[in-house]
Amino acid sequence: MDIMSSNLPDQSPLGSYTEKLTIETPEQTLLEFGIAGIGSRFLALALDTLIQILIGFIVGLGGTMALGALAAALPKSAVWGAALLVIFFFLLYFGYFAFFEIIWNGQTPGKRKAGIRVIKDSGRPLTVAESIARNLLRIVDWLPGFYAIGIASALLTKENKRLGDLVAGSLVVREASFSDLKTVWHTAPAPTGPVLAPLGAAKLTPEESALIDSFLMRRSQLDFDVRVRMADQIFQRLKPKLTLPADNTMSAEKILESLAYERRATGGYA
Image 1 (cartoon, helix red, strand yellow):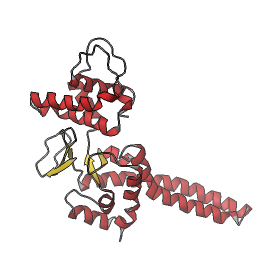
Image 2 (image 1 turned 180 degrees about the horizontal axis):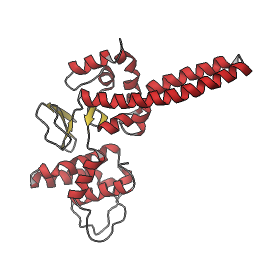
Image 3 (image 1 turned 60 degrees about the vertical axis):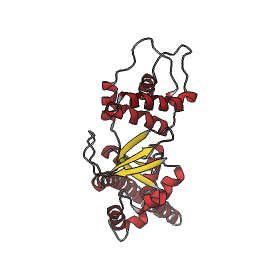
Image 4 (image 1 turned 180 degrees about the vertical axis):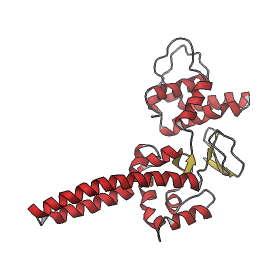
């Protein structure tokens, strides 16, 4: 994949950003992602930290009370209980981010609320190993306190990368919120006519689903010929996975719309 970066203002409804990442897929389809600024990343971190504090307070309070009772009944076992608490807080700090980024495809609760997502520089989702490596570096990004090194790294790098991003080859980008996706569905009504059997949206990878979403959100900005060609390129890539009726007469763009609706109906955007 070819990757280009530009400093042109982003006029999308997501807001005004000074940096955009343009990725050319193997199908020669150009997709643009707004690079998340330090402000939106700080908001996401603040929300996630608040959640961690609340969880830590509840578990810490309960654990301390349990340790007190355990120490009175079985003094030697209290040491193991204290060790378990230490392990829990370690996992809460480091594992929290990796856990959610893995199961939510690059998002934590804070990132989801801030409308940002972690992806690879190539545009594909992070692997489990990459997400873990990215978040283990938080201990270095935190030094000497309050994410000083991480903030300095983000300010000095073109794409606002902290050290964890540099090691994992990751990038934090803006993404369409659920309401923005609903706008796409509203401006592109569901295909009319006979009710179709499932086309196979469940077989698509997160990257392929994101490709459909990006096209549907940006198609109104494309010339007609380019729009038709891009829709066909994406359709041809997905076709081997799809279950199409033998007498299919839908255009490639209509099929992509149907896949987006099908995925939404099965909870794919939840």
